[in-house]
Image 1 (spheres, rainbow, N blue to C red):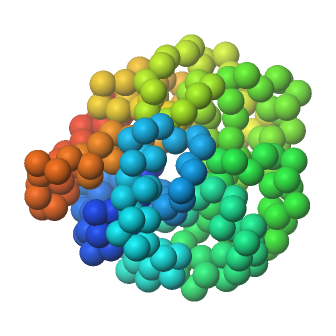
Image 2 (tube, one colour):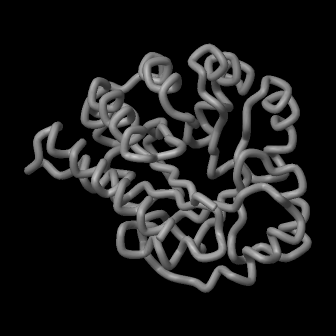
Image 3 (cartoon, rainbow, N blue to C red):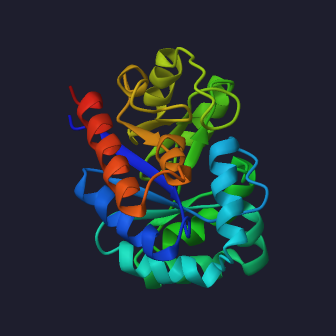
Length: 247
């Protein structure tokens, strides 16, 4: 089975044109799904790397409309999801985002601070629109809670590799939780948090894919590189990870 690679980048950082070029290059490098991060001032689940990129995008004047503009250029070429915190979804309304996603060709949402109980209120309408709302499982979840969360999971289940923030690189043995998830659901399980070139092979054991963010965003933050060099570097990282998880 070909294991999948999901790549996260922050929309609008270092620029909107860069976001489009980088996304298309990642698609060419074998990335299966793109998570376009919606810059937010308080990204609670993200570590310092992604937080820095969020703040720089906002300082550059990022506006929500720009997410829609770049998505319309990217989504025809790669399976695209919006990753964002619940605050903008709440203020603008989930229906607004659902309509915009359909218009841009985006396939759904990853909202890390939206608890499963609250997500249930929105999921039926999102599904009705033909979109996906990704469910999260943490290593601390009980078997009973896992069964509730994954029963109607769509597209893939986001397994958080440890309790904490992204990019922290801690390791936990996930095999038992993966087998519990697979008892209740046939939806693919992708592991995220702390996945990079060095950890991808190990973390991909027993799962269907990996989600990588900080490893790419670190490159975007490197001021010694030109935009072209950044794109070459993230493309190479993507190819390396894709090779490692499938070797």
